[in-house]
Length: 210
Ligand SMILES: [Zn+2]
Ligand SMILES: [Zn+2]
Image 1 (cartoon, rainbow, N blue to C red):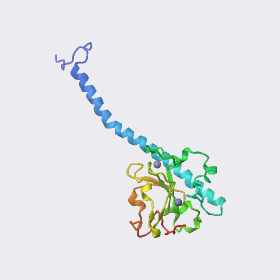
Image 2 (cartoon, rainbow, N blue to C red; image 1 turned 180 degrees about the horizontal axis):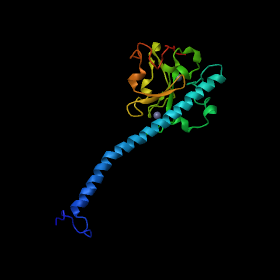
Image 3 (tube, protein in one colour; image 1 turned 90 degrees about the vertical axis):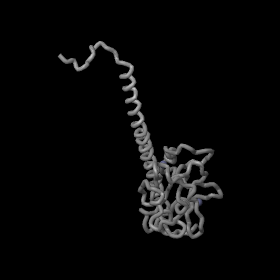
Image 4 (cartoon, rainbow, N blue to C red; image 1 turned 45 degrees about the vertical axis):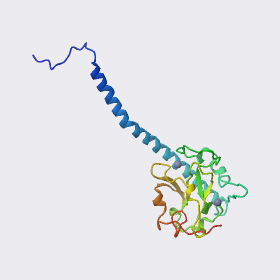
């Protein structure tokens, strides 16, 4: 009778069999670890979205309490835009992006930069298309800034303060209507495509420098 080459059940594994099993486990690990890393980053991105959502809603609430006008930051005195929002948020952690790994020696207490258009007191009525106007973007870890200026008529740009690739190939952005969206950098430059010559999502209504 044929035994199909099967050894008695008491036989131990041969060295080759063990090596094959170890090799298979190593290959599986190599395939799965990047997947796990991606899943963890995805979770951090969702957490960041939630932070920006809370900050955006805090601005909307603040405006309701202060005659439709946004908060007034003052670079000279060091009065930050997030201070008047704190009563609506009551947390320092909300201003931290969980994916920011390198803060260098910066002491800035926020990983999110308010668009300068909003950071120096402006009526929300100034915006024709709030759903297409970026209100908050993500700070580059090594840059000591609290807002970014994009008043294109004055050629004052601080776009290098932004991290355009915080989460995978893009970053999270909070808009003036309170919604948050992950976008690639080029997508934020709609509709004109060139922030230096015509309005984009960073200054949709071409608001002049205050
Ligand atoms: Zn983030
Ligand atoms: Zn400013």
